[in-house]
Amino acid sequence: MMDYTLKVRSLVAINVLLAVAIALGVLFSPARTSARSLRATLLDSGAQATVLKIRTGGQALELYKSGDAWFLNDGGTALPADSTRVAAFLSTVGEVDQLGQVASSRSAWASLGLEGEGAIGFTVKDSTGLVLADIIVGDYTPSSQAVYVARAGSDDAWSAPVTFASYLKGSRASWLDRRLFPSSPAPQDVQEAIARGILELDSGERLNIDYRLIRNGAGWSTSGTGLDSLRVDSMIRSVLGLRGDEYAENGTAPAATALRVELRLGDGRSIVLELAPRSADGSYLVVSSERDRPLYLP
Image 1 (cartoon, helix red, strand yellow):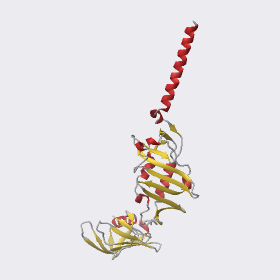
Image 2: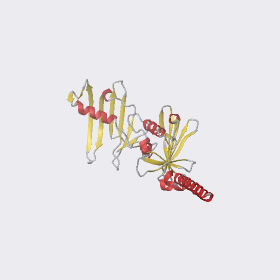
Image 3: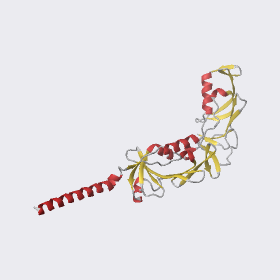
Image 4: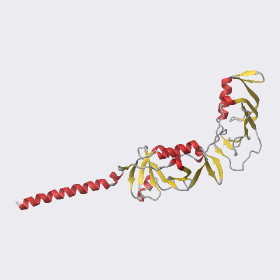
């Protein structure tokens, strides 16, 4: 009888140990690891950020904050950055509050896109130089609802909500404020529009332009002749909303001016655009009175 009881107890003990072993095996298996999650953030103090560095494909992009505005460091020269975009990116990163662990060894990084040319790194610092975040971003997950990330200095890899990743996939130009008129005057503030010169069209036709449009109350006229106000207002909005493709190299200046456009505002100011003759690639080098550096218009 004692032998039977001992045998039963031994079997029970073996079954318990086997269950524990199975549980541990499942808990720490690669499949289980991919399902483990952690309430954690990538960036806790985005509002304190004054430096954002982005590294991708061997290239580095550095943005810094001065006052309320962000700038891009272009070889020691400051270019105006899209401050709204930078703030939105930092805010979106700061909203990440849960990560799913997918690997605990650096050997898995390559398969997750966390190494090589496709990996993107970004570092956020405050005004004292303190690193607030140092993150590597890899591929999208198979569902495309998340992206693989890792913290610099750690072997762990995680999945994070995809919301902030699209910002990092953007080009250098996407981080720049490329508006020709950053003061953003309202269309109704424009009282006169003067344009003189030659504009070369896609067809190769050279269009001679010489006009002065004057606002009369809610309408527009030229040389005493009334104009279609809706069309003129639409043209004014288009000019005010112009954005360049990219800034020209520092020191670049047009050799000649093909077309000059002046908008006179109700407060007595004038804002001016000067377009150089069309280049061989079809773009225009344009100088804005509100920019220190020319831009290229497509």
